[in-house]
Image (tube, rainbow, N blue to C red; front, side, top):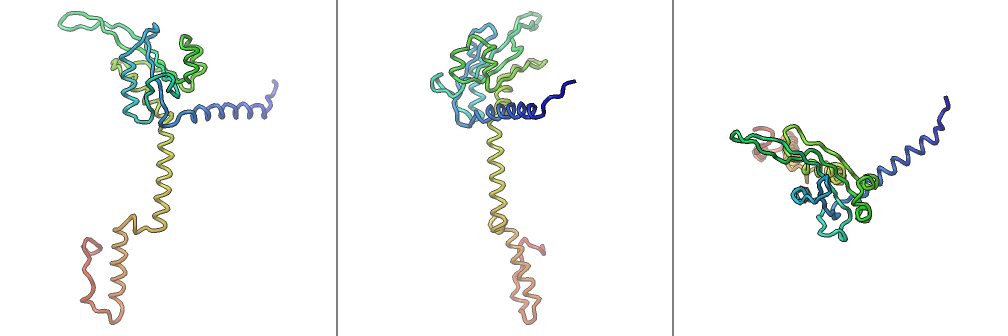
Length: 216
């Protein structure tokens, strides 16, 4: 059996890691997304489009672009529907429900060139996902997809910011712990007063009674 060159394997891994890193760094908080939702028949789906925009507004990480020209990216969702029969007062009725969704995030120029060709959009997508509806058909797929998009992009910035805040807090505590923990400062003052009271010649009557301190 022919052995693979280990250097070529490492090179391939580095290329894949670089591509993944480039995709992750492409998204930044505050960028504008142009939202498009269509049915699997390629007909517009304004109801789903509104739901997607509402979820993005709730997250407050990305802006909604009002035009393709003002967008940094295009968020495209393709929705597959199915008709189910439901009974109400012994009367059957057909209800349209979401079966699955597929979402892509592409650059505006790629969307303009290939919006009629989903295969090309998949190849050029910076982020994509496919989700099936649950058994209860709660139709919350737009919300779920938008949340997963943020889990893969915006939370990284938030976690980095939280880490920096924890580092600053640790530095402040090391320099001036009394600024962050006034209760610790009070206990230190009471302990210092207690040591002084035990020294020879110290007037006991002058020792202040601690409030909410060590002796209550």
